[in-house]
Length: 496
Ligand SMILES: CC(C)(COP(=O)(O)OP(=O)(O)OC[C@H]1O[C@@H](n2cnc3c(N)ncnc32)[C@H](O)[C@@H]1OP(=O)(O)O)[C@@H](O)C(=O)NCCC(=O)NCCSC(=O)CC(=O)O
Image (cartoon, rainbow, N blue to C red; front, side, top):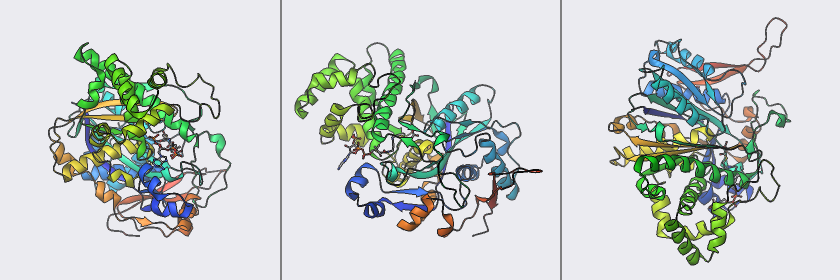
């Protein structure tokens, strides 16, 4: 069956410890730790979204000994493109340089190179496209889907502690070793929202940087964006569960799925969000039948919440009013009563089984990754598989769920099964190596990197990876390369 046969990560060297960040900003570290995480990475000097992506792909090819001639699709999922024309082909060019440097044949000429964009969901769309490719004209070939992003938020904004940067490359295969994806059983959702999280070009009113890069700060309304996440993941789950009911017959209660699934991996903009989204999906399912509503009434009685009002909140046809947004009314939490109920449930055994057991695998290590946008979900899957290897767990045949989300809004629920031969392929996942030994930034260095004053930060040594060598400045009359990045592969032996 088709699915994922390999995963490789690349994280930049530079780290911001959130304990330090909390101190710099007089924020309560205990809350930041509980809600957001422990640390995040930042792109360093000589890095762009394309070098992050190429480094992850290069590690995938190297660690899984992939035959470049078999790769018929190299897809890039990102919302951080700094080239609005070319995409994955830039990565292909870099990979060919590395292959040549290692005396290996280049990637095939008949390799498709699409880029997929939909906020944090681009990588999941890339994965679905790769699975479709392998089941059609690409039968017998391999696909690589790389998810790469640089998540930056403005200094002082609510999103500032939820930054991050990195890439995860996935080997997609007709004969999946790690995770078989049940594409036919997957659920989709999409609904246009205007202002939860966008990146219009019109926002580029910023001073020039000495590294020639753009700073990709989003325009967003934080709490509204979490309500959008909840709404989209709910509807993708519902679409998936409708297919499950059709397969299992009318006697099947969709809410039973929350017990049956062994492990769940979701888009994680910060530590708390997946638990919130998952518990909300469960509450929506409870509200969908008589037995579930009875259970909700019991919870409400114990929590001191008006059950009728909560049910009205959960069953409202659309919590968002059409295409207009009233600032203050819609941009605050759209599910306030459910939030109170979650606070109560957090102290009950239900939370331990629903969140602790289902969302626990690989979650702890993710506290050090920050928001990786498109790469956040595959990074968590990689973390879960790596933990299963390290803890010697028996997971073959387990039923897993990948729940992807992208602002704006869309979500995808992908049911997966762990392959029989998962252990060998999972043992090659470079999770610990990608975390490496990071360089912790001081406040001054953090602000310098954030503003693109990269000369003020000591460049970390690199080897066997790609860097931006320089950025073109010529704008005619005979030759034009203004803004085009030139890359350099620093070979395995070289350091610095
Ligand atoms: C989302 C945020 C507004 C959250 O900020 P705040 O912490 O101010 O919001 P909040 O007050 O609602 O708190 C969030 C959660 O923490 C809990 N909380 C708050 N204070 C607490 C405290 N003192 N102790 C314990 N928990 C606490 C709340 O109950 C809530 O839980 P509970 O959760 O149970 O209610 C911010 O992180 C942000 O603006 N992020 C950027 C946008 C973003 O990440 N959007 C999400 C996906 S978009 C994305 O990833 C991009 C893309 O798709 O491209």
